[in-house]
Length: 425
Image (cartoon, rainbow, N blue to C red; front, side, top):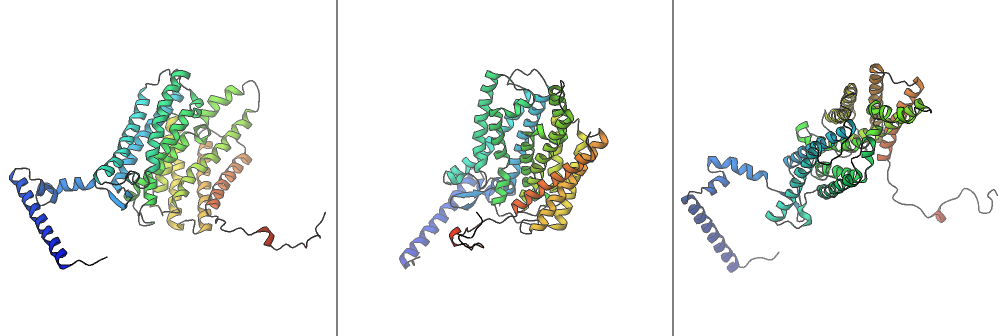
C-alpha cells in the first residue's frame, strides 16, 4: 500500500468533513420535517431502539466477497416453514392410504402441502433476492451458505408439482403403495429433502462450534434433521416396521397370498427388511451429526420421538403404542452421547454407540409390539433380526470411520513372496 501525500491527506480530510456536515444537515432536515427517521434508526430516540432491532434482524452477514451466512433466526424460520410443508406431506400421505376413491388433484391436503411449499419458496428466494439487491452480492453469492441445494430444491419441487398435476389428470389419483413409486412423487421427494436439509447444511458449513450448544441454540439443526429423516422415512413407509400391520399385512399379504403361499415367511421377510431400512434411516441420521457436533442432551430423543409420531400418524395412530419405545431409545442415545462423546475421531466409541443404539431401539420396539398384539415370530427370528439390525448400525459406523486410501502402489514394485516362475500351475 502506498502512502498519502500531505495534499491528498488534506483533501481527504476536507471531503470527510464536508460529508459529515452534509449528514448533519440532512438529519436536521428530516427531524424538522417531522420524519424523525434518524433518531429511530440510530436508537437515540426511545422509539427507535425497537425499530433498529427489527431492521437489524434483516441484515445479512457476509462470510466472503461471494457469499453470506444466515443468522440463527433465519434458519429457525426456514425449519418452521419446512415443518408446514412436511406436515402437509404427511396429511396427504394419510389421505392416500385412508381415503379411497380420490379422483381430484384439488384437495384440502394438497392445499396444505403446496401452501407450505409456497411459503418455503418465497422465504428461500426472498433471502437470496434481498442479498442480491440490497447488499450488491454477486448473483451466485446471493444464495446463503448451505442453502444452494435448498434453492435448487424449490425449483425441483415446483417442477414435480406441475408434473404431478398433469400425471393425475392423465392417469388418475394413485391409491395405497402405488403413490410412493410415482415418478413425479419421487421428484417431489428429492425437492423436499433438499429444502428441509438446507438449515442443517448451513449450520454445518457455518462457524457453529462442536460443543457447548443448548437445545435452543441447536433447535434449527435438530428440526432440520428431524424433518429430513421423517420425509425419507415417509417414502419407505411400506417397509417401516412399526407400520407393518397397517400397510403390509392388511393391504398386501392377506390379499396376495390368500390363495396359497407362505404368508408367515413373507410377513417375517418384510418385517426384517423394514428393520434394516429403519435402522439405516433413523440411526444413520443421528450418526451424521456426530462428526460435526456433540449434540445437546435431548437431541436424539426429539429426533426419534417426532419421527415416530409423524410416521404413526400416517396409519391413523393405530400403532401409537410404538412411539414411546422409540422415544425412550432416543433418550438412551442422549445419555450415551453425554457419557461417551462418540465421534469418528474415536472409532471404537463411535461404533459401540451405533450398535448400542440399534440394540436398545429394537429390543424396545419388538418387545412392546409383542406385548400389545404379538409378533408371531419365533425366538430365533426375533433374536436374529435384532442382531442383523445391530450389525447394520455397526456397519454404517465402520464405513464412517474407515480412512480413505490416499496412495496405491504400483503392482510391479510390490514385493512378492513367490519367486517368478515357481508358482503352482
